[in-house]
Image (cartoon, rainbow, N blue to C red; front, top):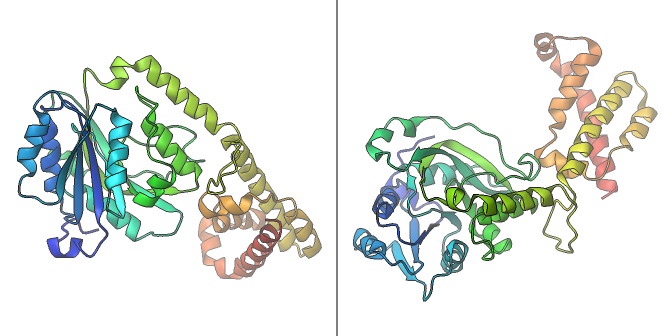
Length: 360
């Protein structure tokens, strides 16, 4: 991808809202805001939510953003906490996409563009956003020493409710979401004062059935501070994490039809493992010409397999693997003869999809 996006070209893409809660961060807020101003992606608005800072960080922010109409400071009447500040940003967001930074975070210049590019080039309804790689650095590290690391390649898997295994999928500054998706899950839980609010929001997005795709590279850094929540409120944060993990491994009792994954992660993992074995047996019967047995075997597939086919079960890959095993071909010979076996794949895929759609 071309990271050198022109000023003119960036306005061909959707508006992005950047939300930055601000509370007593006079040391690093300037670096944070300057990194936003230097983004190659220019079609953005930045909402700084001043949560009643008692130092001069709001004044520093005001000076940094002067003359740039894309930036705006919103002042809370009273200190309300991190979740409430982010929710204020969500309520005031005009962008089609949204991302969240803490006021001591830092983005490399192509960070927003990397993630916008990923979403706009994979824009199925199930795509809820994209995330970049992040570097964790110690509090005292100077930014000048990061000039090489921004070019590191970031390779990771797409995040879904199942692949994520119930844990928080990324640090808050990594993802860029469709704003509608964040609003659908009602933003951040204001009752979580000592951490876990990001895990709660992001795992809820995944449980609704959205997929978060990895973008091209390393997008930014976050500072591991001496007085971070992890160090000050470690036991409270751990308790919240464990609650969220436990919830993912239990069925969800709800009438909310927008939540796609109502069963536990264990349930979906079991369904996927069973499906592969069923497909192996069905392919064996098909190759041997036992069509009636194929139909009987396919009836063993559970309805949720249709859901898993979207992002978790690669039907073509499974069929290729088992055809190769059944006829005794190595990978090279199979590729040379792949057209010979294409009709088997076509027939089995049609039978599988027809059965699954009939039992929904």
